[in-house]
Length: 237
Ligand SMILES: [Zn+2]
Image (cartoon, rainbow, N blue to C red; front, side, top):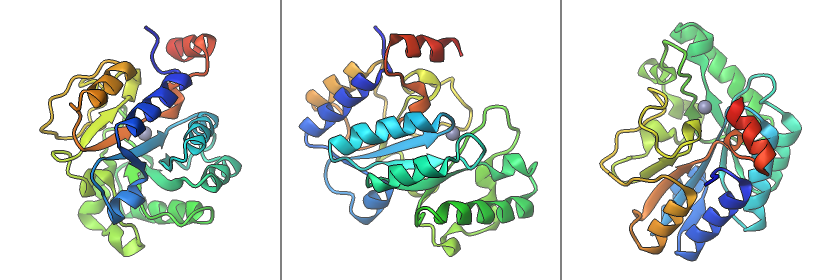
């Protein structure tokens, strides 16, 4: 069965909505978490055009999600970011400054501030999350051992501000569902033991009332395709 098609993504959203889940941005979740909530998070690692596609699918369903953009060339596309924001979504920073500054924490912090200002010209960024590059020897979160992001007007970084023993984390990293072998750092400590192998699985679990009340769903738009030809291209990439 072919997973990771935009039509299936849409079905997933509709399935969660039909079970009474409120789908929201991290910004909204920090304000009011509500009863059944899904924080809909997108890490835009590459292919910003695909992010625009998921953003439009969500907007058509009146859903607002959080989009975390890297600030590297080919990802930081100002017109796409502005368009996604105009659809009502939250924009945040997918940071990787320790990687870029070879682990020099002071340089990395300065770079973080510079990049944050760059995104804030397009959206008043309040939340952010780290990019976990599997190839890098550095952990981007180490920045916050020395510096305090709250002083920058930032209210939440999922790895620090979400308790993943209470919020069930679902990720499509490496184009598989909650793959334990994925990236060393793209994982969270969690008390949940719920196996997922497809979009249909998530919808079924929601229908059977077997999903936790609070969920963070991390979807990487670049993993998803509009049709089988595109799907194969990503697969063989
Ligand atoms: Zn990433």
